[in-house]
Length: 68
Image 1 (tube, rainbow, N blue to C red):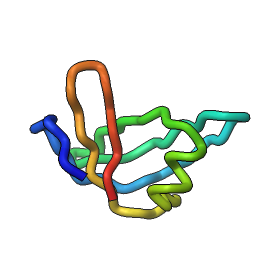
Image 2 (tube, helix red, strand yellow):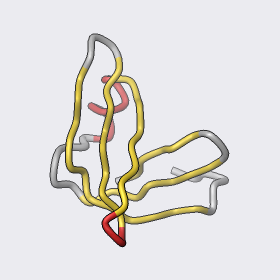
Image 3 (cartoon, rainbow, N blue to C red):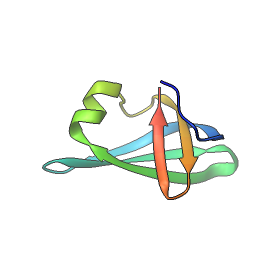
Image 4 (tube, rainbow, N blue to C red):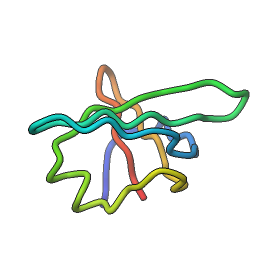
């Protein structure tokens, strides 16, 4: 997937909290810092992201996207 954001940080998924439609994916990044992303359950399913996965955190303005 091509994206315009240039701020990319590799991290590891530590937790996924699912709601009715949306979910919160927590990621630990270098220097033991943490980030999180909110996405639809459909997006979570399409990305096949699960706890322990290595992901790329893509940051652009106020959006935080995950890539696998």
